[in-house]
Image (cartoon, rainbow, N blue to C red; front, side, top):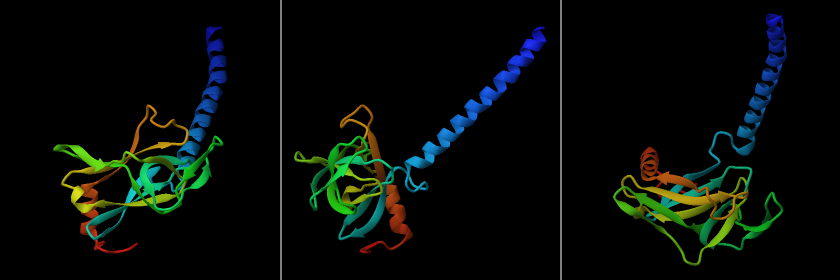
Length: 186
């Protein structure tokens, strides 16, 4: 009798386990690809644009399906209103806007240098948009790393989770050695 009950339980349990496992796999696969616009790139990333007049030009990309917020000193043009998923209307930068964001350059032998401003404003970068900014080449020292703090639209400003997008001096050195980006406009 116990063997018969065990067999009945197995027959009922295995399909349930299979159903749960397959549903979980489908949900996981959908969330992994649905979040990024270009699935081959990170959610938020920095790209080297060019080296011009001793300035390193970098582009911050929002490759996620949500708006992200960064602090900037000033916008090159007037921001446009953008509606977040929860219905709030916020100022968003134009795609490819040239701005001056807050950043930190961490260096192994010091506390870190960076660009800060006491008059900075919190602004948004819409999904699939990017911003362009420059950093003095001299600020990139051996083993240094530039980082910009951001948060996603569903998080409160200054929330518990801190996201940072980073670009290192070694990446810059590798890119400059690989090609002549000097003075090039892409």
